[in-house]
Amino acid sequence: MLAMSSIISGVGSYLPTLRITNQDFIAHRFYKGIDQPFEDSNEVIIQKFKEITGIEERRYAQKEQTNSDLGIIAAQNAIAAANIDVEKLDYIIFAHNFGDVRFASNHLDMLPALAARVKHALGIENPNCVAYDMLFGCPGWIEALIQAHLFIKAGAAQHCLVIGSETLSRVVDPHDRDSMIFADGAGACVLSADETSECGILAHATQTFTKDEAYFLNNGPSLNSKHHIHEKYIKMQGRKIYEFALTKVPQAMKAALDKSGVGIEDVKKIFIHQANEKMDEAIIDRFYRLYRAQRPEGIMPMNIQFNGNSSVATVPTLLDAVIRGEYPEHELNKGDVIILASVGAGMNINAVVYRW
Image 1 (cartoon, rainbow, N blue to C red):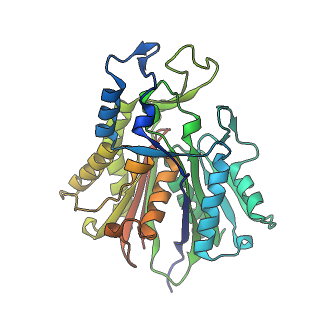
Image 2: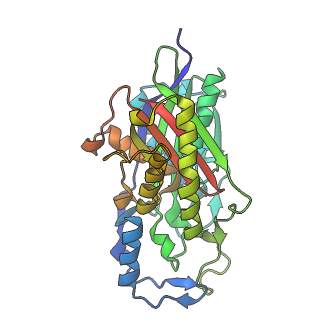
Image 3: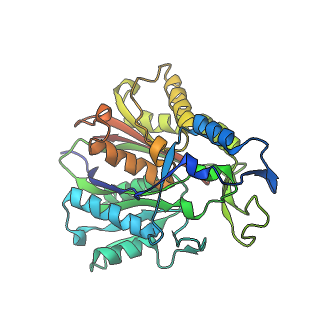
C-alpha cells in the first residue's frame, strides 16, 4: 500500500490587466537617500534597473480591485481546475504580507483575514473549513503549501486551498527606484490527499534567519521627506539580500532535494521566486555547483520580464502559466520532478521537491 501523498489537483492564477512599462517611470523623481536625488538621469537609472533585474513591465491591479479580489479569482480558477466541490475544502490558507490596501490609501486591512473573505466569496457554509492567513514574506505561498501538506500527512485534511496574492503597487515609495521591481498578482492551487499516487510532495525544507537578517526587508518612510510623512513603504537592502540569497537558498534547495532521494540529474524544472533575473540565475548556478554540476539549459522558467515581482504570487502564477502551455519550451509531463523555491522577508527561505 502506498503512503498518503499530497498532490496538486488544480492550479489557477490571475494577473491584473493593467500593464506598467519601465517608461511609465520616466517622470518619477528618484532618490538614493533621504532627499538625495541621483546624479544620473531617469533614462540611465531605468536602463541599469532593466539590466540587473530583467524587468521590462509589471502588472498593477485596477483602482477598484483589492488583494483579496485578486486572490478570489485565482482561487476560483484553481477550484475549477481541480473540479472539486468547495464544501469539501478543509483549509483555506491565504499567503500575503499587506492585506487589502485600497488604491491611494496605504492603509493595511487584514480584519477579517483575507482567507475568511475568500471563504465568504466562495459561499462555503461548512464551518469545518478553516480559513487563515500566512504572513511569511515572499516564500509565503510555498510555506502555506508545506503546511497544507503536513495537514494531509497528519490525516487532518483531504483538500486544502492554498492562495498567494499581493498588491505591492499599493505599498511602494514612488521616490525609491526599487518601486519598479514590485507588482500585483495572485496564484492558487488545491492540494489533495491521494493514497494511490506515487506523485506529489516528496520533501521540503524551511529556514528563518533573524540574527543579522531580520530587517533586510522592512517598512520605512519615503526617501522624499515631504511625501506622505506619516506613511510607511516597503524597503529593502538589495545588496545584502542578494548576497544572503546566493549563499542560503542553494543550501536549502539541496537540503530538500537530498531528503527526497532524487538525484540532481532527475530534476526537470525549478520554479524559483521571481525576484531578480540575475540573482535567480546565480542561485541556480550555485545550487548545481553544490553537486559539482552545471545548470542545464532550460531548467528555470521565468516571467519576471513582463510580470515583475509579485511576492507570494510569483511561483504559483509561473507554475500555472507553464501548465497552461504559455511557455511550450517548459512543459511538464507525468513523473517529472520539479523544485519550488523562494526567499524573502524574515529572512525566510523554503523549498519543495514535487513529483508531477
